[in-house]
Length: 367
Image 1 (tube, one colour):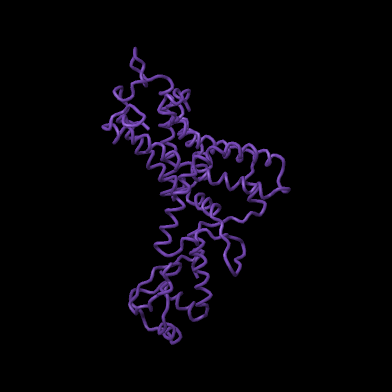
Image 2: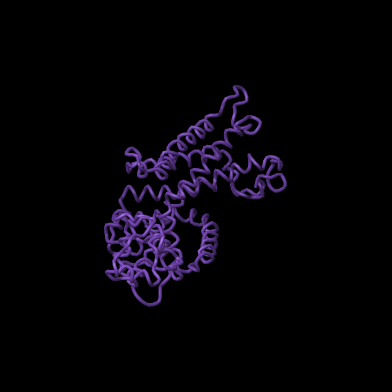
């Protein structure tokens, strides 16, 4: 898009820093928006499936939200398809569970053939990984910050500065100010995701309010940077008709954040959840949970439970134990650390000198 060998005017020597910086900023911005994007689509689907049980306000939000989400959805088709291909290959390779990621989830597990819902399962996983995708987006944003500092020079950014005074033009001042504030706010949210233990950082507003504000400021940073060239959109004589990179990268978050704001203002998502909607788990968490429940049924007995309870607190050496536990140890058993593992079918017998880690009692997957 920018190389002199294609449609741009910049030499190859500017690719490692100046041109790559644009793709780094684009990636960081979209990674921050992926989770609310998936949440919006799931909420719109929930309103559509709840015909007759939602109010006129929710229908109005549905209509406006659907229109606003068309362009962001079209933009995200290629990344969405590539993510589907790579995650299916990865999980199929490590455990043969590629297709299991897309099983339909319901409150009561039914026997028989499984039903698969590929798009919904992927969207649920995108929402569940909001902390991870947000951290990745913040890391890209930090890289863009450092690269941008280096490039903030009249030799690189000629149009940024007034030719007479040498100072930044007003829109670029707003651009850089918005970028600085966005980085500061989202850094606090990232710290909450990584080290959310301190009392000040556990407050709900860190996610509920700080995140949208930081996202809007990050989007404004991109808009004020490039809106001056949007009059050339779709004109073939400019870059062979390729649209502005700032336009394409900012329309995705603008559409997503507007719909998210509408639903928050009118309480659409809250009503859907309070109406009895079953909340899906992340696909990998669901698989681990089902495996654990299957193991509990398979080894459900008082003696086995006693063995596992002893294993919670057993030291690295094994003292003399009662006869029932000896009898269990004589047959092939699972270590506590193997619960939920995808390789439980070939579990080895417990060694006499095995060490066990404690399983917290409030863990939902503990016995």
